[in-house]
Amino acid sequence: MLNISKRVHKAVRFLVRRSQAFDRLFLPPAFVVDGNQAFIRGLYRSYLFPGATVIEIGGGKNPLISAAEKRELSLRVIGLDISDRELSAAPVGIYDRTICAT
Image 1 (cartoon, helix red, strand yellow):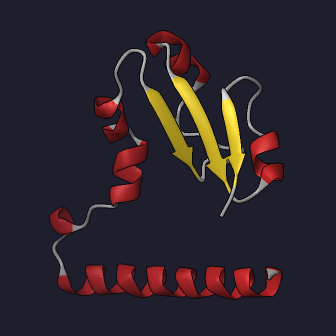
Image 2 (cartoon, rainbow, N blue to C red):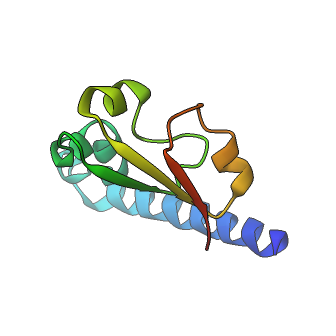
């Protein structure tokens, strides 16, 4: 399975590079937005509200929600990842519950 994972990661990196090359070639810079980075920089915050339950999928050891945000908004954060090792490496107390599943 590890071998498949490496091939998948390699294929994804290849496709990302090709997509970026396409964007540079055919699109004006104003049209090129990295949606993932925009989300990480704060778009997700507009969806949080006090007392919400957040299911963080794939965050593992690097959760998107910070301890300060969790405390400030009294959030319940559930970590869902395919790797128990990743979930275990997350900052202490960030997840109220963890689920290891594919």
